[in-house]
Length: 384
Image 1 (cartoon, rainbow, N blue to C red):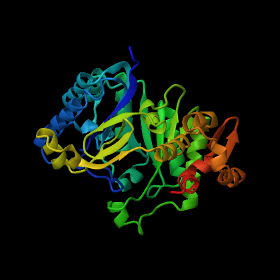
Image 2: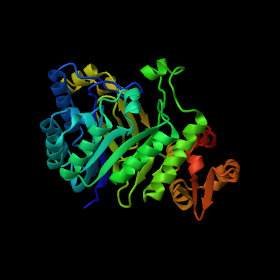
Image 3: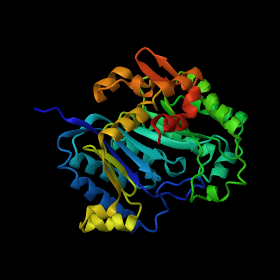
């Protein structure tokens, strides 16, 4: 019998209570319960459509993101997961993650989530400073988060991620240090620490010249502070923005960096499957109509690309170098039949000399300093 290939599933829930000032994700407050029900039905039809194509796959990660998935009723999330199990071969020990906003869950809802099979929860804390949370437009307070976190532990969650942001309005090194100390004391299994990006089309972008943001030097120091503080607390800084206790790396996120197959369902969801990358449009009405009365799936794709050898190699280098363990020279040669250093060695020399990259036995990787400017270096290295 042929061994099944591992597959990840991403499900996008585009609903939230209110839109944060920095958010450019495909999300909005729902217009009605009817809109939610139609969208969930479309999601399930979409998954069922791919059941046959994924027969040779075994699902080992499921990630429900948003938006705010916990804005849905527990029974709705339960129905979605039942559909995943009906449509796909889901492994018994699959990592099943749901994102949660601390302002949208209570102990009862968390217990229902855990009972439905969710075994990893990701809380969007962002900051432990209430003034900073208000500046971001978050709907929760530090106290709300503390209660949600305690409730999640009591509900049986033994794998919790906390999202934090740095470089946000009014933030200082002192306030960020207090946030880091706060989350470190809670001892979560995983932390994601992201720098704020001012994206075009957001309220923050319209106010970009007046926002009270830390300067570039301070923002860099905030990144270093996160690395030092969390590393000292026993977290492994394994990817540009991610820290984990031993054995708790995010299996779903790793599949992105390791270029493994995943199927995304819902508006604006991306997929990488059978050597093809594609994404659905952000138009919810169009997505729902297509699932309810199928006509031409191509009409709801915002992109669809067959991955050629050049693109495969470029993505391989870019994604592997996001990991702190870096790129294996032997694995690269086995995959592409050529020597990595022969192609990139000249450019690497100045980044290694500058302390931005390091060459260790059989591997090339970024240093902490290099990780902070990795996008710039990768653009130069790969000639984007």
